[in-house]
Every structure is written in C-alpha cells, then in structure tokens.
Amino acid sequence: MVLPYDDFDVSDVTTYPLTSRASKVDVSQFGAAYDRGSGMPGWFASLPAILAGADLRAVVEALSAARERERPIIWGLGGHVIKTGLAPVLIDLMARGFVSAVAMNGAAMIHDFEIAIGGRTSEDVESALGPGTFGMAEETATGLNGAINDGVGRGLGIGQAVSAYLAASDAPFKALSVVAEAGARGIPVTVHVAVGTDIIHMHPAASGAAIGEGSLRDFRYLTSSVAQLAGGAYVNCGSAVVLPEVFLKAVALARNRGMSLEGLTTVNLDFIRQYRPQTNVVHRPTVGIGKGYSLVGHHELLIPLIAAGLIEGSGPPESTEP
Image 1 (tube, rainbow, N blue to C red):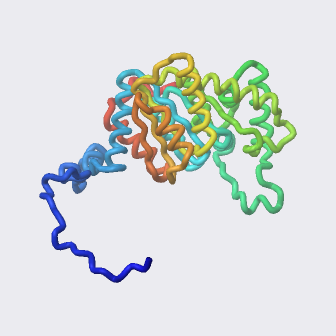
Image 2 (image 1 turned 30 degrees about the vertical axis):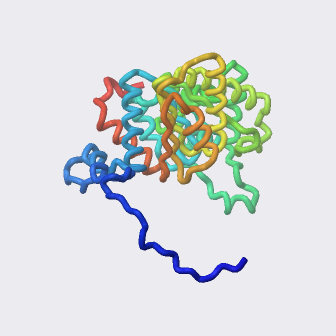
Image 3 (image 1 turned 135 degrees about the horizontal axis):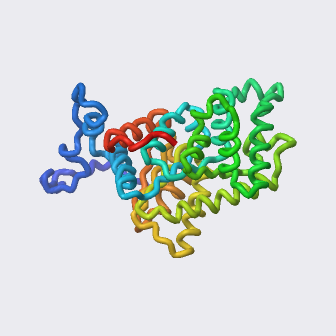
C-alpha cells in the first residue's frame, strides 16, 4: 500500500484551559536571585525547588535530620574523593557529628595512605605505564601491605589495620588522613577490596589470605553499621562498582535478619548516573521504606556544598578534638 500526500485536518482539534492542566512546574518553585551578603543559607534558599535544586536541599535536610535524631550517617568513598583534596572537609564533618562510619574501596585507602606519609598522591599513569614504574612506590607497597598483613594477623579488618599503623607512625601529614582521623575519633573505617584492582596487589608483600580475610571482616563490620540505618543515611561518593555492590549485600543481610531500615535515605554523588549506584544505592534499598537521591557533578564541588549546607544548618560541635 502506498500512502498519498494528505494534509491532516486540524480544524476541529479540542483544547482545554492551561489552568486546568496538571503541570510539573509552577512559579512557586522558581529560584531567586542571590541576595548579596546572605551567605550559604541565602544561597541554598535561592535554589529552584526543581530537579537537582530540590534534591540538593533535600539531601542536606535529610543528613541534618539524621544527625538531630542521632541516627547513623555512613559515607562510602571512592579514590577520586580523596585525591581531589576533600579530606579536610570530611574530617570537619566527622568533628561535627555527620560521619558515623566510613567505607572505602582500595583506591581510596591507597590515596589516603600516600597523603598521610608523603603529602602527595595520584601518579601520572600514562607516563609511568610504559617504563614499567606504575604502582611501584616503595613506601606505599611496603607500608600498606605490611600494615594489612600485621593487622589482619592480629584479628583486625583492613581499615582498622591501616588506621592503627598510621596512629603509631610519625607520618607527617596524618592529620589530613581520613583513615587516621576516623580511627582517632573512634569512627569505624572499613575497606572493601577486589583482588588485583589495587597497585599494592602487584607486590611480593601482598598476601591474598590477609587481603581476603581482612576485607571479609570489614564487610561484616560494615553490615553491622548498615543494619542500624533506620532513619539514617548512606552517601556513596565516587565508587561506581565495588561499594554499591557491597552496600546492596549488606542491606540484603540486614533485611534477612529482619532488621528494619525504615526511613533510610541514600545518596549517590558522581559525574554521571551509572547503573550500579543508581540501582544498588539509590533505588533498590529504599523501595517502600525511604528515599534515594542522585546528584550529578564534581565531588570537589558537591561535597563542600553539602558540607556548607550542613554546617550552616547546625550549631557548632561541642568539641572538634578527637
């Protein structure tokens, strides 16, 4: 069948009043021009109550509410968060009561360790890969593998092991280490490792037994923290695969034991929306019981913005000392 060129008749199309239509946006949701001198509270108030503007404020309000109700806030950190210089922001949030536990992947632990011992991290992979020097820093390989092997041998998880190592060391920059500062404040640190993904696994001192045992121990520690997340929050920052998978399994174990996660808020912060964080952090754990948010952007912008919102919306901590 060949169709002709027919001009469709639109003369009797039906319409309705705009005011009778359900609309997703109205002027009550609009943002406002920033009022000079109003500071961060004024800036947050100026955001439109639409999409990311509404979500950013909702995240700050949820984390503030969790702290007020003395419910846990767990931060999951990928390597990019640490190597973009956000340790001082996270350490300050610890002091203010906005961090109940920290989960890291192996990359975050490595960057944090290198900052503590040398004040620098993040090598140029492209220039180092060809000559065969990528991942071959002696202090990182020896120090981290030694800390893990020794600590796990004493019954610790990887996070505890590295924290204890740094605490006992004279590392010149350990005040800028999330792992060291969390340990000093009694905040649990867990490290969740995929074997072969981290530079320290390339070295003779790497022990599969210690890495596996320590990371499994840390998974169970994290699950104990996740099981207490009713009314609390989990914030996944910059881990696209490992931590979302680990978090989902921790949620599954908690639910298997009949533990309620009612009122859970989950947040994912990253450059793009990816499958695992979106499903395993934002959506699946909160279905029917809570709310998940996905904020897209640079960690070095989003995390300080969230921190500023939390600080402006809360009183000063009683003490910022460990």
